[in-house]
Image (tube, rainbow, N blue to C red; front, side, top):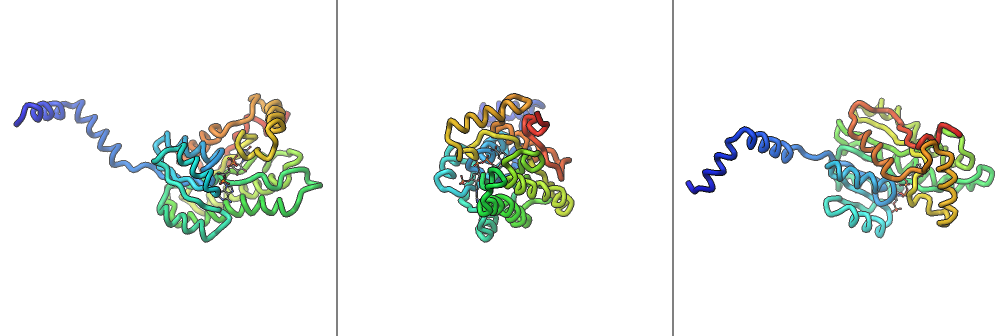
Length: 267
Ligand SMILES: NC(=O)c1ccc[n+]([C@@H]2O[C@H](COP(=O)([O-])OP(=O)(O)OC[C@H]3O[C@@H](n4cnc5c(N)ncnc54)[C@H](OP(=O)(O)O)[C@@H]3O)[C@@H](O)[C@H]2O)c1
């Protein structure tokens, strides 16, 4: 036996080395939880992907625009998987989940700003598109995911404070987000032991607001920051933290967690 081999045996025989070895083996054999984020190429979904990767999850993101998805994947690194998916296409949703195969957590972070604005001028087609691309897309993704989700896993929807707070100019958005929030307790009860929750963000600085010119957007954010008890609008990481909390806490189901800096408390 060579000198080096002898030293290795002596080191490995020590109690400290054995504890280290056992811990290392456990880490190697425990498989990471897997999370699929629909709408993971931007804003809240992207921040959630980055946060979950930091926490050790295996993460898959989907997005609708090839360029956005490519930029997001590059920023997140090689370990993230990505799929191009228009979540209004029911057949494509099923095909994408089949390619991903079994996973633990579904996070529905997609949506757009269609349907916003004063009620008197609301364009019904915009409101309909808002529902199509949020309510029906969330619904279809959650439904298609059922055969691929592990029983100990979860679904996390994203609603919005407009669902439960009187905010003039948000009737169309509020109606869609209220529909999402209404799904949560019923699905949590019906799909048990799968956990079903939602996050309800306040005003969050993401590309969702890009329909405003830069200056106007800054003014809108300043106005909301003034109305918000914590004195600022949110950032995507604020919501990513809440989503990770809902994934990790296995005693929470059927809940919508409001993360709005206190905006919904009123002025
Ligand atoms: N930002 C806020 O102030 C705020 C407040 C309350 C609630 N929310 C909700 O939070 C969710 C995320 O919003 P965000 O602020 O992160 O917006 P965002 O930055 O615009 O991100 C939206 C994501 O959804 C994807 N997406 C949109 N339509 C899709 C479709 N049909 N199929 C597949 N992917 C689609 C986008 O992909 P592409 O880029 O490829 O289109 C993008 O990855 C939305 O449901 C929004 O309503 C946002």
